[in-house]
Length: 317
Image (cartoon, rainbow, N blue to C red; front, top):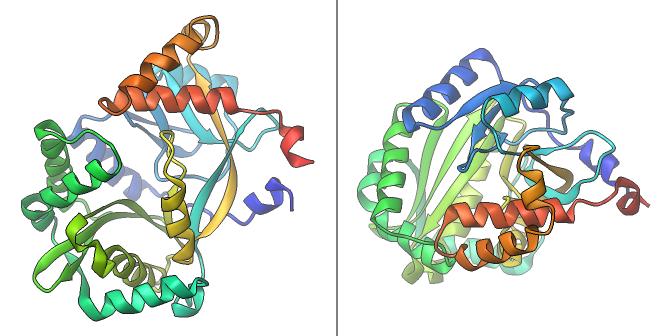
């Protein structure tokens, strides 16, 4: 099957003016840049790196669109392309079966883990103030396991995120508990007909009870069964990449891996530096610093994705 045929099965995303207002309110409260182009809401992920939020179906950007976005101080754009242009082979992970249940879990080992988890864990929707007060150890454990920096500044950033999300109707927090211990949490945002799992944090010492398995299974069942919800997304390939084991986990939870054509656009003024004699040096420095700086991780991801964009025909044969 060609990648175009597979991408046609991606769920449609509907954004109305109410959703956009809540997305805008969230970004303003966090001091995050945003704009609307091509019928989509674009948010800065840091370093003036913009992508549609939530993840979108394939789109085309006109020269006028690009001029506008560069005029909005964007330096990098990351999106799924609908055009016959060089692209990086990415993916989206979705559940769109309204009857999602144990039969959706094809891995016998994963079904066993979920059943084990549900015997030891309880899953429920929680208030964001619980995350602000008690999720610190889970965030630290998750960052450490993923070799990401965690310090007081990172903790304050997430606590601020939770406080802002508390008053925004698009956001929900869910958690799994082992006894009375907070074992795993996730934050989701619902826009139009889609629910998107934005992040998951878990406590290392409680992973033996598989609290993330329980959380993902119960929450996904809840979301996909809601009226008006057509799909639940466990995320698109992030620009910084993600471990193969994490992707395998999501697939084993019944999320369908839909291939997409990722495309990177770089501000014309930056291209000579990032795609010339200095590009290898820039990537080397960014790679060395990637464990200590999210900006360095973004630069590394941008360069890897940009260099990995291939001719359309070479992958569609």
